[in-house]
Structure formats: structure tokens, C-alpha cells
Image: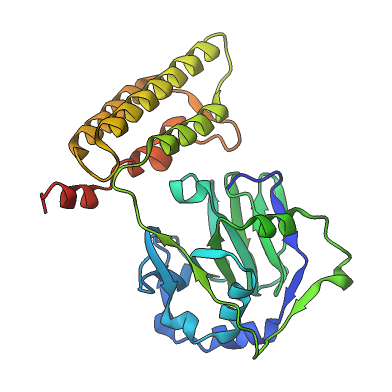
Length: 322
């Protein structure tokens, strides 16, 4: 999610000893390799689709057995009063890191990642858009993951963060963006055996066809970030041609939605239109990138929009093909 600055620290302090004790009690089989096989990166899934061992982001989210075995950590999440999407404990081995990247996928357009360090060291640094911070154990942070960011663990011990995804309520965002009081006045959030906050989790099934209004919204946002990687006299014309292509696509998608609806009827027609825009975009997008992070405009179009226009499995079921 795009934010007004790279980092926000929330004025909260959690019980580090209790967090560490619950995480230390996890069995070795709770930890799995990073889905992209990034060396030295592993995770324990806490909230996932159906509470299962999966990294999917579409579906009914639920706590995993690992989270159910950690009452304080579950209480920490529930206490924010927001709806949580996929959430994990993220572990970095000594000397490992997270390579520089920007989160451009559809999932991240409306979601932010809350970080609560559980086990960390002064040598661990989180970099985002030229700024670097050390997130201390028991603190709470969010950051702008649309900007380029990376993490370095130069310590001799492993680093473990609770990393939880949410869109956030209005109250959550007011809290994040408010000027924090002096650290001595930050709220200490300990274990409360009488707390009864429910853990709210997403019900996020994938629509068979992406609605026209959402397509327009995503494309308008992409167009607002368009710049040429190398400025020159031809840059405005190239940006204009690519922007016009996106606008024409949005209009044609709206017409198909008006004709067929979005429940998967005539999915093949939507797929043909998506394939046509993919082919047309390749030459027109050459040399165009996102202003904030320098990522290829074509890659963002693919990852944020095109891959999510038609849910193929749902479409096949609707048309009786599976």
C-alpha cells in the first residue's frame, strides 16, 4: 500500500518475553521455506486460507493451529480491531536478507503489513526508499511497501517478526498517522486473560470476473504513476499512447461486464480481451516505469491487473467445463 512516508512507528509496546516464549514453543515443522525460495528466509503461517498450510491470498482466512497455540500473539492481533489477511511469523537466518524489491501485486494495492519484531538484534536494518530503521523487539511498525525496500540481518542470531496484512479501519489509520506521544507514554499491551476481542479475518473469495469499476480504479492508479525511465522528447507521446491503450481497455471491459455480468458467464470473451491488451501493451510499454519504485509498467499491469481479471477455475465451473 502506498503511504505518505516510508515508515510509521505505532506508539505501542508488547510483552517481548511472552512473545518470544510462545514463538520458541513452536515445533520445527511449523517453519516452512519462503514461497520464492529466498535463501535464509522461512515462515510460520498464522492466518491462512482455511487455516491450512498455504500461502494463497484468496479465500476464507482463518487462524492456523500454530496461532491457536499462541494465545498472547492471537490476542495481540485481535486487539487491533482490524480484519486480518494472510499473516505469518517471518524468520531471517543470521547473515540473510530480503532482496530489494517493491510489492506490486494486486494483494498489496489495498493492504499494509504490520511488523511486530519478536526476536531481533541491533545489527538488523530495514531499508525503505533510502531510509533505514531498526525495529526493536515488541514495537509495532508499518511501512510503504510500494516503495523499494530490503532487509539486512547482519547479526549472528536469527530475526523473527510477526508480519500481518490488513486493509485497516479508519480508526487504525488515524492511530497510525497521528503524531505519537513521548515514548514514556506509549501504551504497554500485556497479556489480559479477560480480553474478549474477536480475531477478525478476511473472507476474500476471488470474483470470477473483476468488476469494471475496480479495473478502472486500478488502471487510473497505474496511469498516475507512469513515467519514462529515460526522459526525452518522445517520452510524453509514449506515455500518452500507453495511457490511451489502458483507457480503451477499461471501456471495452466495462462493455463486456454490462453485457455478461461478472459471475463467470462468457469468461472466454473476457479472457480474449485480457490477452489482447497483454499483447498490445508489450511494445507500447517499452521504457515506461512507475515513478515511485522504477518497476516496469508492463510488469505492474501484469501482476496487479491482468493476472486477476478472470478467475479461471471459477469461470470453468460456471461454464460447465470442469
